[in-house]
Image 1 (tube, rainbow, N blue to C red):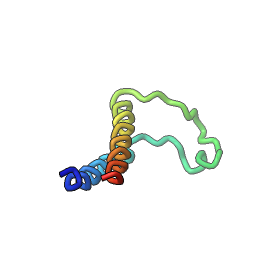
Image 2: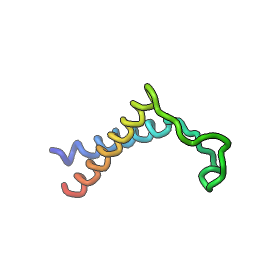
Image 3: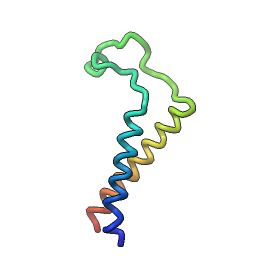
Length: 74
């Protein structure tokens, strides 16, 4: 039963995870990835929808990881 549903669950969680990562705000440029200064402060507080999206991304990533381990067991 679960082995028939699990691939669809992983596909749905994967699409949601990709979309939630792409929707997040990115202040870092390529120069700051290699240690350069981006010109401003790198710390900011997430508020409102950004915070919900950030926490939701973490939850979906955890669910995706759990479903991947479950697929290995089953």
